[in-house]
Amino acid sequence: MEDFLLQARSSAQDKFESDPLLLEPFLVKAYWNLTEYNLLPDLAELRWPRTEYSNVPAGSLDSDGTVIPRPAAFEPVFSKGQRALFTRLLSLFADVMSTSGLGDKFILNAGTLHGSLRHHDFIPYDEDVDVCVDKEVLPKIITLFQEYKPEYVFRYGKRLSKFYTRRIPTQLEAVDSEYSRNTSKYPWLYPALDICYYTKNDTHVHEILADGQVRTWARSVFFPLLFRPFGFRWYPTPFNSIRYLRTLVAQGPNCIRVEWDHVTESERKRSSIPCKVLGNRYAFVERSKANRPLVSSRFPGKLVNNLVVSRERLVVWNKNEVSLTVVHELYLPVHPDLASLDTYDYSRNNINELLI
Image (cartoon, rainbow, N blue to C red; front, top):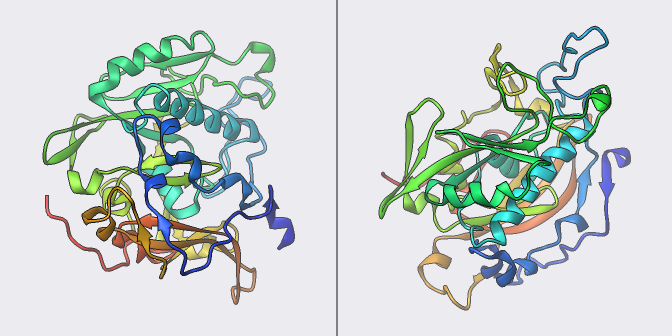
């Protein structure tokens, strides 16, 4: 099991169960550098699972120009370079947003949000990265990213935008380089951030889907945004992340590979497997409500009362499935719905229904 774990530095989470947890660092603001963001735990100091990669970049071609077959369902899709590129694209996007007064105008979305909840990181077999932005500030976002041409491309779409690098140089096509490449019949490249849009009013938030449909949540499900871990960085997420996610991604005891192939932008067969079966290969987040009090100097009332402190342990079953190895542990302020989730079945908890 020692080979499974990679320790960047010794753990910074040395808190006792009874220590108060300060809420302010976890509240997302427009400018992250002007808030208590730097008081959040340093995620690079935690132990992390050793990352598995695909042997070849997804969508790459062999010597005769044929697309190299990709790994089977639930095997890692990203090559080492592609995972590094996805991480860089998301980090750059967050840096631009948070230094331009837009740090509270986007969230992790879909499978990426699911990864934060389930793995504190990418879903190990995921294929893309998803964020959603406030449509009201989209013109400003487009303008900001014009400054990053030609190395990066922000491709606007009416219902979905893409953010990726310039096309991989021809001489690097055969190697695992951190560039986006042409993997489908469409003009955009891969890897790319998928950027959807949401609108809001006094009572509700609406996500505009690629097919023109709209999903709707009560504002109390969406706001205020809370920071959650995703790899070595913290990113904004909806206030009640599991309530939000249940309208996007099927929840139950099975882990799913969806019908849409994000590399080739084409349909494929849906695949599923009990998440528990993956639990001795990939690390999952185990939750329990902690006894630590949540405190706030500026929001001592309703907001604090609507949250609980959750102990989130990243765990992996040993091969014999009789014991768990704890990879790392974090204490987070979360909606009570999230604190009660089953580790491998996100349909199981005592959800407090919020009518919309």
